[in-house]
Length: 340
Ligand code: BMA
Image (cartoon, rainbow, N blue to C red):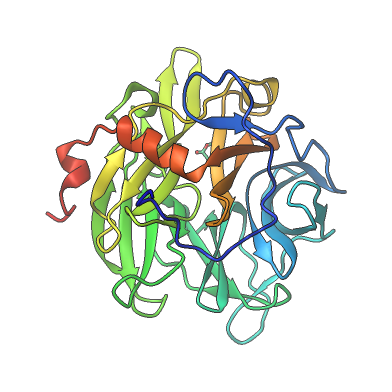
């Protein structure tokens, strides 16, 4: 018996295709019908990408980055029976404040969607006198109530843990500069109430490996396992022809997620297919969500491709855990508590 266990609610209908023959590197394979969302998916939206989905009732729900035809990104709600074919609301999500008054962000991109206890939280990047983190909650996907921005600008790529740790909400984020962020490390912060955030800790630095040498950022919500929190994140390298965004994997300490226990030195997925290499921004694989099932060990990874499409990739829980552990290289800044 393996001591590897995924600790999550069962999802018997994870979208799935069996592993094809001939995979030589990381045990991650693409859905053969990718991309699952193409261009001009709804009126007024040119591209949907960098989006997050999760099981809801007997089907699936998601928050999607819709790049409108005026170039401004907003978040659109989508529903699906199989998590592959999606139907979107015609209008972007209309956020309200605590009093129920309209409270639309100026723009909203790269949403993540995480359920903690009985509430669904959307976390995204928004303008707060510069790029920072937007946060909202819903219990019914009808009313979306904004929560005040958790962090000062500039920050992106925030994602919540799916349960409290030591009684506190926990959130990964990636502080940056006011420009297009030619650097960035992942930090974790905690909150007793989703309003006041503190006890910030450094989790992991860019630069350990060439493919993530420039900057890194949180991706899908962490998956609880018997070894620690399994994360799929993005790492960026700079080439003479621009940035390349790949997917990496790491396992964080279960009670103290600022400590990285394992960090895979190899890419798990990197742009190779036409829809990843060619688009509005070429060479981008940008993970934002997984759908996963502890009983079968199936994990479906949702990622934005070339800032133009949504792609789907698959992996098996035990295989990916072993691959990350077998190929792990951690540095001092990974394994320390991250407090100075
Ligand atoms: C990042 C974010 C992402 C985007 C990526 C590649 O900085 O803006 O939304 O996918 O760049 O363009």
